[in-house]
Length: 98
Figure 1 (cartoon, rainbow, N blue to C red):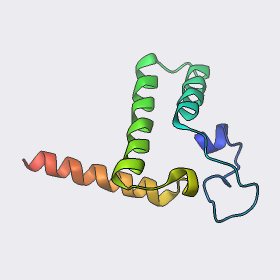
Figure 2 (tube, one colour):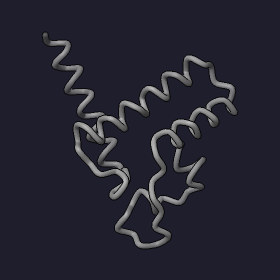
Figure 3 (spheres, rainbow, N blue to C red):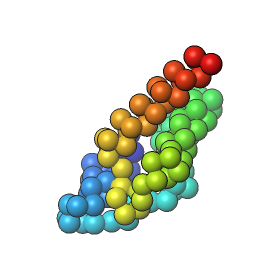
Figure 4 (cartoon, rainbow, N blue to C red):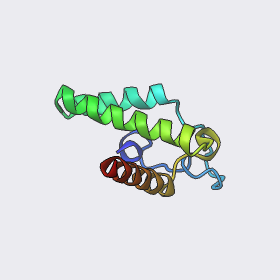
């Protein structure tokens, strides 16, 4: 959603090895603000907005604190999402077994 709506399909910020139009990845506050705006334009419920924002914050924190990735230098990629979903699955599996 973020790439399509806010980067207008330009993924160069997500792939820093690609030297075309290298831009800095926006800060989390800007990303959250833009996501809120997009959700409100689509008239989603306030609860849905809160849930989406919460998941974005969790992913951002995971990437910085658990994966220890420099997202401003390296951006996000599909591997980050796959790793996060695997992390959640393993975390839930451990929680269910205790």
